[in-house]
Image (cartoon, rainbow, N blue to C red):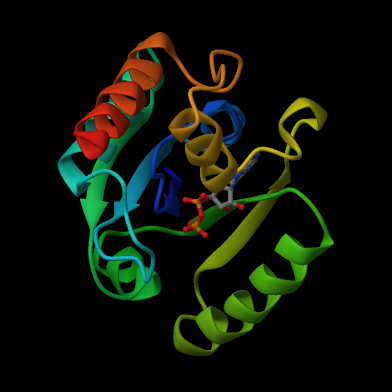
Amino acid sequence: MTRAIYPGSFDPFHFGHVDIARRASALFDELLVTVFDAPAKRLLFSTEERIEIAREALEGAQNISIVSYSGLTVKWAQQHGVRVIVRGIRNVDDLSFESRIDMANRQMAPQIDTCYLLCSPKYVYLSSTILKEVASLDGDVSHWVTPHTEQALRQRFAERKR
Ligand code: ADP
């Protein structure tokens, strides 16, 4: 039984994330999408909101669950019987960044490996940052997120404008 995690900020979860989560869930017995509670970024959504958005986007997926976590990813993974960390790669910048994290992680937890999935071409330019920028300017984001997530984005930016 191989348990894998797909960690991230997921602020919010978009179709690039859905694609990686679904493909990873076909490779491992169990996939936990782990939502990091305190990334060093200014967040648009709370941890609970990010979990709820990811749950809705992944509804119906058999072996995927969504949970929050805090602290070091590898430490959490060790405490929860995780063998594999999944990360999505869009370009060489992602690869370069991830390879440095990978080295540090393996130093701390040599028994845990990271599995990289190249993102699908149609999401190669998509990031939560671009998504939020477009949504904040009232652009169409319907090809990047579910209608539920789109609504959550619209509502959050409307609240901010008040
Ligand atoms: P981070 O975890 O670095 O804060 P995110 O939460 O946005 O960043 O992303 C979580 C994971 O999803 C990372 O492995 C990231 O590379 C991957 N990812 C982000 N955007 C995409 C995309 N468009 N397609 C595939 N994977 C992506």
